[in-house]
Image (cartoon, rainbow over all chains, first blue to last red; front, side, top):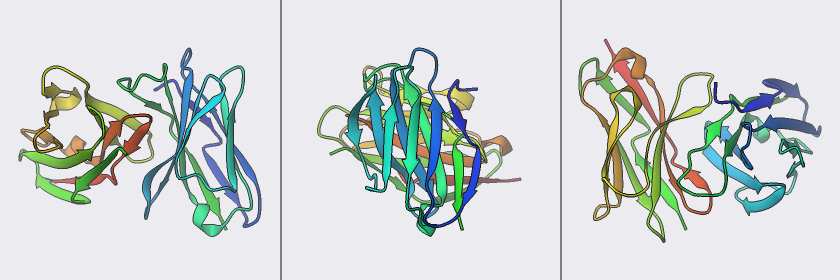
Length: 114
Length: 110
């Protein structure tokens, strides 16, 4: 158990809809990262938050947004969903922003868009 | 900008054989390098990491990796494969954030 909790584990929805994925980091970790894993694109970095502030953006679509709340949990919002958004979405946390620290991953939220 | 390239999306070895998974990196600063493993239906977990110091790094489950600056490589090895090693392996580089390679799926044949 990594200590990172993601909900829901599975989600099936239709094109055009909006979903919210939730992540609770390990106790005390201030950094939260979101990744998208799909068969054709591998593990893509989406966004990084540190203590409530956005620190870095990767390949995140404009239809997607995220935030980190004062209690440090984070949400990833996906809107106007397309078939190609079907993927496994991972959240990971790290104690700070020090680049030597490992990321601890949740078990992921599997999104299926029909 | 940081990036990693994993050579070979699939590697198949026999049980007891040497495992070699290749990773080359690109980084504008001294790199911090990681190997993660992903078992089916699970998240990624850390195998080992290189930050500074000794270039040969030992990790969990008998894996090790050697940082070679001149070759910009960080290959993962294990002397003797076990059936339980079958999984997806990811190399990663950490600069401002952590970027992963495309992954290598390891199959172990009995």
